[in-house]
Image 1: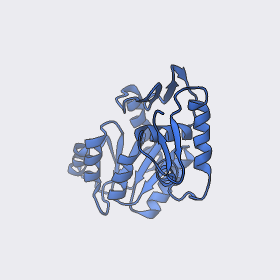
Image 2: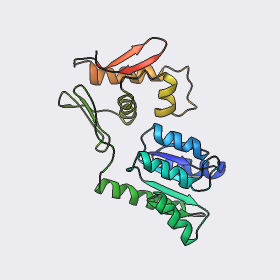
Image 3: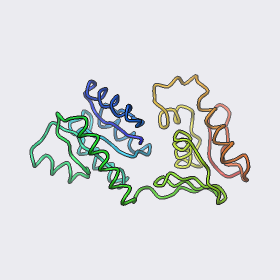
Length: 225
């Protein structure tokens, strides 16, 4: 899964990122409420792990604003505040579950499994994205072109999803790196061009019209010719 972790304590964030990554999840980390909100609204996540006490914007307000834009993503709130009223405020703000610090990492994993299981049983997530005869279903993780299934890797799927959400708009390599790859990635690398070529071979090579276009010196745009 692609998980957004919003946690301002560096040691806690590093511990959780390492543990979740070892479970084969892709983890993005935000260290304050404003950054977490921006990342949550700019990208598509399977789960958000959100601390309640954050600088910039507290976790309750972050949760409310995410829910105002996206009602489907599961949110697990972490906090040192364990009173019943605190839990009620978190759940009322839109959190799906509430875990009090300190907690056992195995319990966190169990709650994550429960949240994702509920979502799979009740798939009310983002609607399919379409351009021409290309369709991407974010819930079922399926891609079709002209009625034919297209097999993509997880990274290719995330890249295509980002391009489709921004169809008609030029996105730079920096935009792609920040939203699809880690922000610390070497911007001088040609990894973006490599993955764009992978996508072209799978969704454009044998189809018409061509949908992925390069604007030299600017970036890429997904649109019909």
